[in-house]
Length: 105
Image (cartoon, rainbow, N blue to C red; front, top):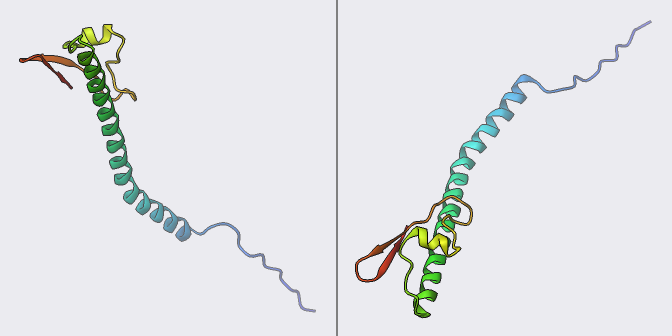
């Protein structure tokens, strides 16, 4: 009488399969990370640009109404305007310049 062996198929992953998966994930991460960083820099630049445009808009409103420019960060803050960008990545400062203008940074 012949005995039949019932062999089960091996389950799980081999070491080679795991190493290929890890290598693939590493390659994808190496490609994606620089793109992600560039995206973050661009979004933060947009935050700074929006904050500076807001200062310009408010300053022009004050100038048009005859109040003149705000030339210090302290006075700007006292009027209730923000001294940081919307997302908080940048702090905003105002300084006066010769000739009745202002500098926003």
